[in-house]
Amino acid sequence: MARAFVGAPSNIEVTPIIERHPTREALVAAAAEAVTRAIGDAVARSGLCRVALSGGETPRALYARLAQQPRADAIPWSHTRWFFGDERWVPRHAAESTFAMVNDALFSKVTIPPSHIFPVPTDARDPQAGASAYEATLRAQFGRVPWPAFDLILMGLGTDGHTASLFPGDAALAERGAWVTTTRAGRPIPDRVTLTVPVFAHARAMLFLVAGSSKAGAVAATLGGPRDPARWPAQGVAPVAGRCLWLLDSEAAALL
Ligand code: 6PG
Image (cartoon, rainbow, N blue to C red; front, side):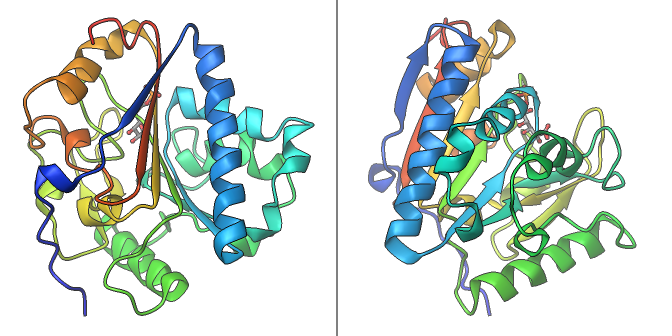
C-alpha cells in the first residue's frame, strides 16, 4: 500500500540549477545534451533508464532533436522505457495527444521496442479509469515501492504557472496517495491524466524546458517569488533528493 507522502521541508529540497540560453535553438541543443547524459548515467548505474515525458511545443523540438543523427546512435534506446508525466484525454492518435506528438517526433524515428513505451490509456471508459489503469501499469513496471523514482522527468511550464497537468488551485495538486490522478482544469483540452506531486518529488532528475516571452512572468514567480505551490505548482514538484535543472531561453528568463 502507498505510504502517505508528507512532503519535505523546503530546506532539504535540492536547489534548482538554472541555465539561460540565448535562443530557443540553443536551449533545445542543451536539453538534448542533458537528456543524453541522464540516460547514459542511469543505464550505467542500473542498466535501465525510465523517462516521463511532457507535451507542448518546446519539448517537441527536443524530441525531434533526439531522433537526429549522430545523436540518435549515441542513445542506448533498448535500455530505455518511456512514460508520460501527463496526457490530454483525447484518442491516442488525435492531433492534441501528447503521445501522438512524441510518436511523430521521436518514437517512429528510432528503434524503441513498442513494449518499452507506456502511453496513458485514453481508450479507457473515462479519465478516472484511465488514471487507475496507468497507475497499475506503473506499479507493474516499478515493483513494490512506496513511490516510483523516474530516472528523468521532463517538464514544461504554462503561462498560468501549470506544470504537467497540475494547474494552480486545482484539487489534483493536493493528491498525496495515488501515483496518478485526473483533472478537468486543462486548456484547451480540460480532461487530463497526470502523475501526482509525490511522484514528481521522487524523481532522480527533473528537467524543465521553458522558452518564450509569454513565460517570463510565470518563470519569475516560480523561481524568484515567495513559496506558494498552490499558485505556482512547479514550486511543489521539485525532486526532494534528485537533480533539478531549468533550461530557459533569454526571453523566458527576462524577468528573473
Ligand atoms: C501539455 C502539458 C503542459 C506543457 C506546458 C508547456 O500541454 O501537454 O500539460 O504542462 O508542458 O504547458 O507547453 P509549451 O512548451 O507548449 O508552452
